[in-house]
Image 1: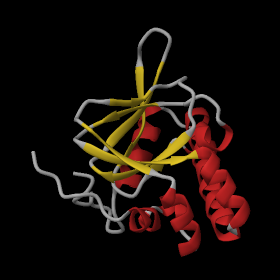
Image 2 (image 1 turned 180 degrees about the horizontal axis):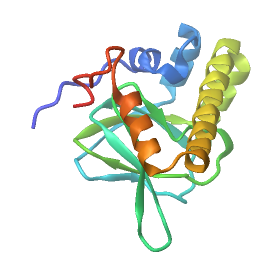
Image 3 (image 1 turned 120 degrees about the horizontal axis):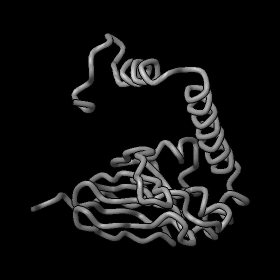
Image 4 (image 1 turned 180 degrees about the vertical axis):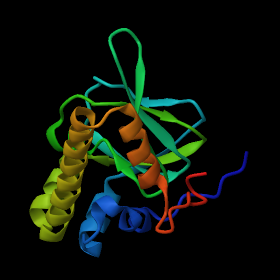
Length: 177
C-alpha cells in the first residue's frame, strides 16, 4: 500500500509536542544525527525490557504501546501517531524500555539517539525546557492514573475515559471514532 514520503526531519521534530519550544538550531542538531526507518504493520519496534538508546518520533502510521505481564497479559498504555514521541525515558537514562511498541499500520519512525538528545539539551536551553515540560506532563498523567485506580471503581474509570475521549461538545471526534 502506498504511503506518502515522510516529511523533512526538522519539520517532523518541530511538529512533535515533545519538542515544542525548541529552537530551529536545536532541531537541526537533533535531525543531523537522527535516522528514519520504515516498519510493516504488526512489527515489534522495541520490546519492554530491551535496552534503549534512542527515542522515536512517528512520521507516518501509528503504534500501540503495551506492557506485558509475566504471564503474558497485555495492557494498552497508549496509541501514538504522526508527531508523537515515545521511548524518551530510555533515551534520557539509557535504561530499559518500559513498554513494547507494535505498529498498527505501516509506519515510518525517526530515531533520535539519546546521547545526541542529552548533548543538545545542554547546548540549547529551549530544548531542555521542552523536554522538562514533556516529562512533567507524563508524571502528572501517571499520577492521575494511579489516583483513578485507587479512588474510582471500574464504571467510574470507564466514564472518565469516555469523557476524556469526547471533544469540547462532548461528542467523539472523528479521530477517536
